[in-house]
Structures are given as structure tokens and as C-alpha cells.
Length: 61
Image (cartoon, rainbow, N blue to C red; front, side, top):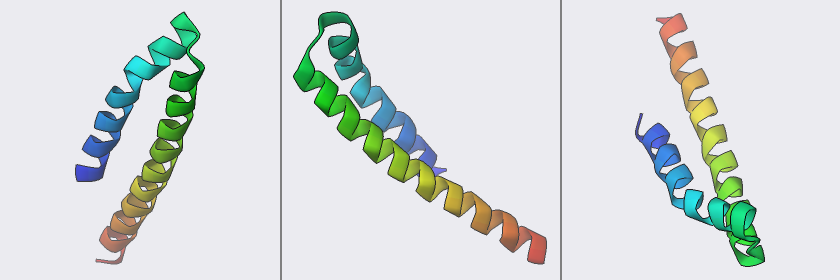
């Protein structure tokens, strides 16, 4: 659950940059959004792997 909370926090941190990019046209904010989305993608993959491992562990028991 810790990684899921990290994901929510990360999403919250890039929300302001997303607003600056989409509503104000800031290209620098767009670059930060892209970087943040890449981090979200990696963290989401880690969460998926963790969920799968826990699910398989419970199935074996």
C-alpha cells in the first residue's frame, strides 16, 4: 500500500505543472509533466509486479 500512496503523491505533485502546460502553454511545465508521467509509469509497473507476487503467494498457501 506504501507504493500506491507514493503514486498518489507523485500524481498530485505534477498536477500544477499539467495545469500550466494545458492552460497556460508553458513548454517547460510540459517537460516536467512528461518526466513525472515516466516516473508514474515505472511506479505503476512496480505496483503491478507486487500485486501479482502477493496474489500468487496467497494462491500457493
